[in-house]
Each structure stands twice: as structure tokens, then as C-alpha cells.
Length: 389
Image (cartoon, rainbow, N blue to C red):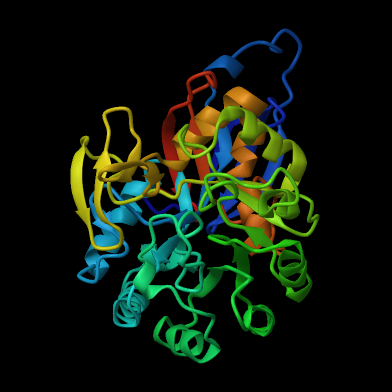
């Protein structure tokens, strides 16, 4: 890490395509202006400039390159190491995701993350909060996905309160199934605590989804996954969530969780509330093979990059793709700048609706410099809070 209190960089704005000069002071963008060329200079130099874009934000990630955020033996050092590796992929903010497990394991992991944030400045600045994906989800086959059935349970506000205390207030997202008893008052309490509530791993009917949204749920977690293999044409819980204007929608764009046609429809339906996530597991970046997961049991990472439960190729066990890879894939459907926004500005707007974000004066200087060839984008440099990594 190279700390720089003040510096200037030039690049091609990822969205406008214009050359810009960005001044950073004490970790914040203090100035951004278009570079105006003089006579005869209109086409000189710009092709050599890197593309500059805001850092990526991953709302749902379970681990990376051998570090498993659901392993009860996880250490603060491993979390710091994973943070370093994620920066290399352009991720400057992430929400470690804990899936359904025993109360003891979840408690242990929450304390570990609280220690990591307290001990390590990088982890403190990169971790936006913890995402609890369970245990308050459906125990039914299909909606449960790869989560362990024996640990699924109804929403329990007292339990959440204890966990939030162990986490030092870091729980920022809770995914639940709104058909479970007590969901509505639970959602209201979460919202009052500043926790974003996502609907996911659910078999809810129309009324249950509507009541959840009325109570304050604002996110559909990895819509189209964690579902029954067959559904009624209509109504069903996918249509019902797409129809809710107040719901943001996160999607896994790894080429396995959603076909391109479905991904395209979701994006068109949700517009500026469409969010890309990785749902990446510890096996992301590792060689293909069989792995034993403390969260889901044995999984198979295929040579093609598909991650599924061993012996059950139709049951995905998360993703083995990075958020950057999801952006690249989605760029082929909607264009680069829109795909990048879905993995940066959109999740940040959901989690920080009142903050200055992206390439905006006053925003944190979380910046990614990419090669100019956006048909095959690769990362050149990453700045986090104005520090070069």
C-alpha cells in the first residue's frame, strides 16, 4: 500500500468516455474536471490514458482464494489476506456473507470479524458490514438451495440482537423468507436497527411478499436462485418481486446461476435497482476438483467453473467467479458502463443512500484504473481511500 495525501490522475471516464483529471486529497475526490484539448490536440494522448471507474462493491461473498468466511477456524489474518486479494480484482468494499449454520458457529464467526475490523485498518475500511444469509430461510427443498436444513429456523429477534452485539453492530444485511412466522415484526425491527432486509431462499406467496415490502424489505437476494425447479406460470415469487418497485434485485452473473435471457429481463425490469453480486465461495480462483465445505458439505468445482454439491449437479453451491468476471459477462448484454454501475454505484446506493458516491466530488477515492480496451477489460491499478495498492 502506498499512502498519498494528495495527488492527481488522468483517465478516460468509464461512463462518459471523456478524458478527465481527478484530484484526490486525504482519501476523498476533491476535484473532477474534463480535460480540454487545445487546437490540434483533440485526438492526442487520450488512447494512452487508462479508464477510470469507481471501486466495485460486493454485497454477497462467502470467501475467496482458499479463505472461507464460513469456516469457524477463520482468523483475522485470513480476512486481511482475502481483503488484499479482493482489491486486486477491483473490489474496494465487500459484505462477508455468513450462510445458515449452527448458532455457535455463527457467533464465533461474528466475533472473528469484529476482531478483524478492530485490529486491521484495511479490513475496517473495506468491510461494509456483514450479510446474514440465513438461518431465517425456508427449509423446503429448492428454496433452501445448498443451506443445511437442520439449521433453518424462524426469525428470532432476540437471537439477532445477541449476534449484532457480538458483531459490534456490523450486521448490515439479513436475507430471510417472509413466509416464516414473525417475519413482519422482525423486518420492521431490522429496519429500525439500520439493517437492510433481503427476500431470498423463499417460497412466499404474493401477499407475504407484499407484506414484507410494506414492512421495509428492500432487496431481492440473488433473484432466480434459491428457488423451486418448477413454478406456476403466475403468480409466483419471482414475478411478485420483479413487480415491486421498492425492491432492489441482486443477481449472480456467472453464466450458471441465470441464463442470459433471464438476466437481461431482470435488468430491464429493475433498471437502476439492478445489482450484480459474486456470491463467490472460497474456491474462487482455485483449481477444479472436490472440496469439503463446512457450510454446505462436499462440493465439486468443474473445469468449466461451475460449483455444485457433489453428486447433485443441479444444486449450485454458490459461485466460483469474481464480481469483475460478472461485470465482464454482463457487459456483453448491456454495455460496460451500465454493467460496472450495477456492481459499484447501485449496491452503494442501496447501502448508503445519503452518501456521495462513485466519481463525484466529495466521494471516497475508491478508484479502479483499467486498460482502455473495454472489450476485454483488465485492472491496472486500484486506489482505496486514496491509497494505491
